[in-house]
Amino acid sequence: METIQDKLKVSIAYSLKERTGKILEEVPASYPFVYIHGFNNIIPGLEDALEGRHLNESFSVDIPFEKGYGPYRPDLVMEVPKDELREVGEIWLGMELEMYMDEDVREFQLPETADEFVDGLNLDDDDESDGIYTIKEIKKDTVIVDGNHPFAGKDLTFDVTVVGIDQPSFSELESGYPDRDEYDDFGDFDGENEDFNDNNLNRRWR
Figure (cartoon, rainbow, N blue to C red):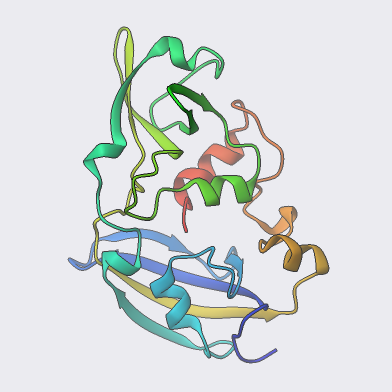
């Protein structure tokens, strides 16, 4: 496969910068980010820019926050009692949790799969508050959590190289995500899986 189109598995290396030039994230060709094109599991501005690109092609694209990680939403920052996190177990700064609201009942838990994690990111500006929240501050009896993506509200520049274009497996087409062993070691995990947490902080997109 030489050209990116829908239903193909794409591997990219990239450098992600703010418009000021500050580097936010770098992914080398030796450990690329892999996704299935056309399934809306990366930000729309980047997926649009990758459409029709060729293997080994390098390019830069400026992406406004509206086509990136969305606006920063103050309503997604909240203070919750520690009692609400007792089912999670040990907590720490930077820990990422999935929140569900069922009428007036709020529940936090660890996301169980890669697709559940990505689908849970709050990347739009609707009123839905369910999703992935990061622990920003731990107080005596409460915890401050933030449901905004770390890059929310930022205009970004991607310097990208296409390092792989492949035919996905049947299971990858069914799920819309790369198979587990290729998806940043997301696999099964629990709160003690340090590999998941490290990759999570570096690549919680999309």
